[in-house]
Length: 209
Length: 209
Image (tube, rainbow over the protein chains, first blue to last red):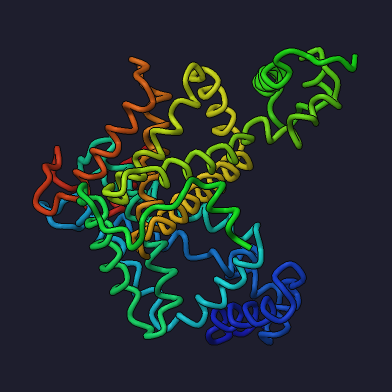
């Protein structure tokens, strides 16, 4: 029982996701996860502090990827170019993990506590991005704005990647999102609304069923 | 005791803030808040669902302000111009409330649960902004990106307003933030780092004490 177990981390993560989906996140215990993976609880705790970490354990890795990519961007790179490099550096982590990510997203949709935890994770990635930009000499508020805007692009691109019927690469969605952000912020003139604006909120809401 | 109390809401909010600062948010009870304001608990619950709502009770008002401002933006306004109108519409709510807002920010800095609640509020404002843009005919992902980027500007502008030694208007910080966002996303060429980029993260971190 004490011997090295191949792929223990992946087996535990897979068992946890299966149980979360079958029984709900709240009703799944670490004991059940370990049993389903054919491993011990002790092995589980070698890889994860608790069951929430199965869903959020990669945050430290993302912080490293962001810091390294931004520090390593060419000297002439603009803040947003450096942020783009950081977002692109995160994309490969999700390669072949679209099904896992979709299952994870469904768990978040069903659990407010997990959604809150996701917002905290995203906010900490935006802070890490801004901090890495400041280390390059980018001043405030440019560094914070580029960090927040960059993580907003990642969030929107990630959701679109999960829903994309063509299952195009996450990095493609990130590039499209960055282009769209540039277009949205560059446009100051009329940007064709497809229909004339409706009346203020209350009226518009009242129309809904 | 049952008669109408003038400024009951403000008196309760002020008493709550004072007690939160004196004794900490966690250790303050609704009973104490009501007593400090010279009012009854029943009166407290006429205005607030719980003590957390003293700090977050204005979210609904912000949703309305955003929806109305974006729906009412000129037909030719770009998505970001419409978002700018929404952010400007929120600024007057904070007029003469800088001291209160600074005290509130200090409470958030000391309490992770309150910071999480703030992130949820900001995320819901970004969603409301995107929804109002979609009602104008703005398509995805432009609507979501403009919503997220706009609320990012508000968040950064708000923090800078609280720290501004000159105490300039919040709306000025919002306009500066929007200009800065436009500059950050427009720049693709070299944007002068004040110093050459340092080595990747691990090295840079190791230098810290």
